[in-house]
Structure formats: C-alpha cells, structure tokens
Figure 1 (cartoon, rainbow, N blue to C red):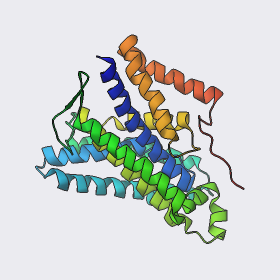
Figure 2: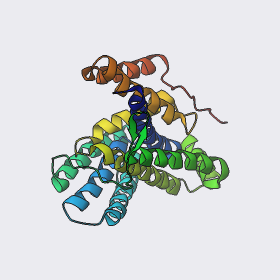
Figure 3: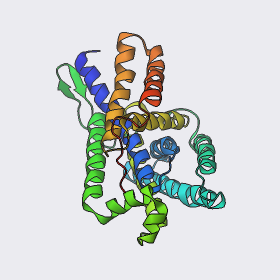
Length: 291
C-alpha cells in the first residue's frame, strides 16, 4: 500500500468516524443525552438498503428512501418511546434511559439479523463512475460519496447553528431544559428533531461507508463505539470537533496496521481512548458554558 493509498484511507475513515461523532453531538446538543444507538442506526440504514435491493429486488432509489424512513422512524421512536417516558418516570435521571438505550442497541442488531440475515451483504453504489487514478492510487466513487456527504453534513449543521433560530434553540434546549421551557421553547419537539436529524446523519454515513466494504447486522455496536470515541477525542466545543476526533481514530486504524500489524489496531484505539479519558476527558475542543 502506497502513502497515497494510506492517505485516501485515512480521509475515508475520518469522514465516517466524524459523521458518527457528529450524530452523537446533535443529540447531545439538543437533549443533553448520549444516544448509544447511533451505530445501529448507521448499520440499519446500510443493511436495509442492501437487503431491499438484493433480497427483495427493489430499485436502489426506492430502497434508499425506505431505508432512510426506517432509520428516521427508529430514531424518533427512541426518543418518544424509550428515552422520554423513562426520564419522566425516573424524575429526569438519565442513567435508566441510558440502560434502556443500551438494551435497544442489542435489540436493533438482533432484529436486523432476523430480518436481513446474519451473513454480510455488499453495500450499494449510490454513485458510480470509473475510479480516478491519483499517483498510483485510485479515488473510488465510495470515497467521493462519503467525503461529499461529510461536507454537506458538517457545513450544513454549522450554518444552521449559526444563522437560524432552530440552531440556537437546539443548543439552548441541551444546555438547560427548564430554562428553555421558561423562555417559551418547545423543548420536547426540539429533542425529537435532534434525535431524527442525528438518525439521518448516521443513516447516510452507514450507507456511504458500506458502499465500499459491505455491512452486517453485528457492526452496529462497533460503529457506536468508534463514533463515541470520535466525539470524546474531538470534544463538544465545535461542530467540526468530531471530525478531528475521527481523524485521530483513523490514523490508528490505518497507520498502526501498516507499520505494526492489523492485530494491534484495536489496542491502539483503546490506548488513545484511555489517554483522553484519563488526561483530557473534555476532548480537544471544550464546549463553552454560557450563562
């Protein structure tokens, strides 16, 4: 593998990990809740599209629409049917809801295995064109797709947060729910939209990433962990912070196997996670507290 190929792999993984981290951040900003189901959302989106095309013979674009709708409904239901009622019954405590969502993670994975089978399925090529030769390495359509989606997602959310009332309300609801209610903000609706938007981001990331290597029912938890680490490393002080965290993770996933061996990649990720949890748990970009 050449250095150009390594660089392209780092870019692809950076975008994927960063998008998963961004999906976490949207929910955190809008509700103050860590939604551990982000990885399963991404898996379900990719697996739904592949399963509908391969097993049911649907056209790609129809499968994309159905897959997106499935994930958006799943994300919305997580807030409406799991997080919201449990937080109300527990007096606003987050831990019971976190436990319930952790159980939901396994439920989504097992349900996907029952519906779409337990064998990996190839991802679907949303865009298709001949690979571009770049100094002996090839820029694939899947790379262009995920980079393009990352630009739209990160750029769109940054613009939304800075220029729209919804963007400001999103952060206000996550900062202080009761204060936001006093100000007249519809906190429950904002929280629901945050879950739905994060589901859409995770779905797009899963579909784009799976177009290269495929997808299986059991990758959701692994993706959830990587997205969470991208957020932890990058921090919550900027919408672009998960992209930085994704870059650091991608270095460990690409460079470590190249120079040391593939069996050490997970250990390197764990080492980075322990370093940040131990010495900088707030991440590289610290979220400023507004009073």
